[in-house]
Length: 562
RNA sequence: UGGCGAGUAGUUCAAGUGGCAGAACGCCUGGCUUUGGACCAGGAGGUUGCAGGUUCGAGUCCUGCCUCGCCAGCCA
Image (cartoon, rainbow, N blue to C red; front, side, top):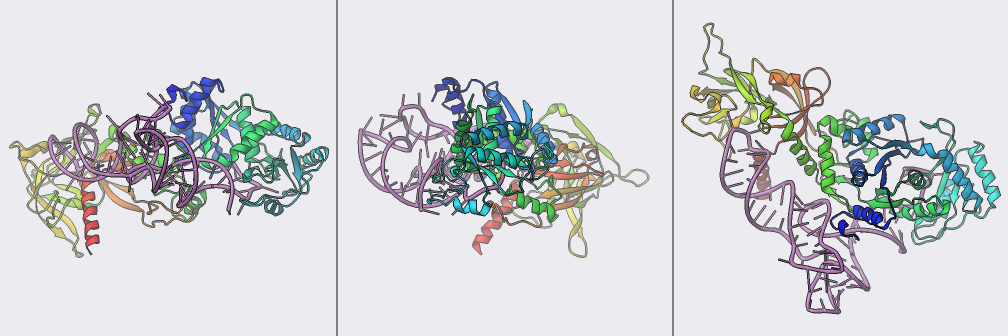
C-alpha cells in the first residue's frame, strides 16, 4: 500500500494504489440504480462515494440506469432518480442507460456463442434451477450444454427475432456447473421478455441479465472502479470471467464491494414501503415518515446533512447499522446555523395577565417587542411581534403542582416570557374534565424586554403568542414509524400513532414561510413548511430536550422499581 | 451442507513494514446562556469474538474454533 493511502478507507487506498501502479490512469466511477423505485437514504452512500472518489481524482462519475428488466421499470423512476441525485448536490458527468448498449451487448453475445462459450438452453426455469445443485453439491449439465456453436447461434437469433415465447429458452454462459460459487454455474445471460421497455420500446424481446450487462457496461464507459454493495461479492468472479471471455477489458474495470448503509428504526424494503403506501398508512412515497430521499426533502432534511453523515460514517466491509439519531444530529447542526427562530404554541392554553394595562376604551394595550431571528447569526436581525395581556402558552409549560426539577410556571413561581416580561402564576381555571384551560398571572412592568433591572434570575424562559395576533396552523410531529430499533426488514412492527397532529397557534410571520423552508419553533424543534393552503408544518427534528430526558429517566426508574 | 465476507467503546469508524488502542456522535458532570437549544471545559466508557502459538513486544503474524451476513431468480 502506498504511503499516501495510509489513512484512506480501503476503497480509496485501492484507487490510490491503482493510480500509482498505472493500473488505472483516469478514475471513472458510476452510480448504477435500476429505475424501479425511488431512491432512499441507503442509496445516498453509493452516490456520495462514487461522486466523491471521482472528484478527489479529477475523474468522472456517470449516472447509469441499469434498465435491463423492463417489467420492473418506469420512466417516472428515471426522472425521480435524476432529480434526487441533483438534489443531493451531484451533477453526473453523463446520464446513461444500459439499454444504450443493447446492440453492442448482443453482438458480443453472438461472439461468445460462436466461440463455444455460451449456449441456448431450452429447458424450463424449474429444471434449470434444480440442475444448479446446492451449496456443497455440484450441479448437473444441461442436455443442451454441448450443442454446436452454429446451432446455438441460430437459436439465439430466433430468440432475438421474437420467434419464441417468454421462458422458452435462455442464453447461458458455459462456465462450470460444479463451481463452488453458485453464480458461476452457467449463469443466464439473456432471457425472453415480450415486454415494452420504457426506452427501447418494442425493439427487443430478449433482455440481458444484470451479470451480462453490468460489467460490460462498465467497460464500455471506461469505468475504472465499479463500486457495489456486499451482496455482489459472489458475482465478482463472474464479472471478471465475462470480461475475460469477451476480451472487453481495456481498461479493465474492477469491482469493489462495500457495506450498505442501514439505520436503526428504518426499513428500506420496497415491499414493506409499498404496503405502507397502499394501506394509506403514509401519505405516499414522499410522506415525511418514509426513508426515501424525496421524503427526507419534504421533511426538511438538508441534502448537506445527509451527505455529511455519509462522509462521517465512511466506508467499510462491516455490516453495520447507524443510529438514526446520528442523522438527526447532522440535520440539527445544519438548521441550527441557518433556521429562523419563530414562536409556535402546539398545545395551547391561555395565559391571562391580570394586571395588564387597558386603554381608555377598556381594551388591553398592545405593545410591540423585538424578537431575535437567529441568535447564531447576528445578520438575521430582529422582528417585531405584538404582546398583550392574553396569550397562548404551551400546556406543558404550566403545572398546578410543582414537581422536582420542573422549572416552568407553577403558582407562585416567576418565569420569563421570552423577549417580553417576567410573569408570576397566580392560579388557573379548569374545564369540566379538570383540564387546565386558563392560567392567571401577574407581570412586572420593570422587566421590559425580559430583563430584570435588579438582576434577579428566573430558571425558565417560555415562548408565547398573542391570542389576538395568532394564526391557526396544522403541525405534525413524528415518533418512530418503526418502534423497534432493529425492525424486521420484511415484516416490521409498525406504530399506528407515530404521527401526532396539533392545531397550533402560530406567530403571524409563520404564514410567510416558503414551502420547503425550515424554521425553528423555539424550544420545540425544526419544522418544514409543506405546500398547500394554510400553514402546515412537518417536524424535521426535535430540539435536544433535557426535561424530556429527565422525565424519561424517571419513568424508567419507576418501571424498574415496580 | 460448500463458497465468500465481516467481527476494535453504546453507535460508526481509525490505528504505514508487529511498537503507549484513538476520534466523532451518544452518555455523565460542570460552566455559560433571554430556547431545559446552541456553545465551552472535563469525565466515564475496551478481556480488540474465543482459545492457543510465534515474539522482548500481537488489534496487526500463525493455528484451531465461535458468531453474524450474503449466495441455490429467466431480480438487481
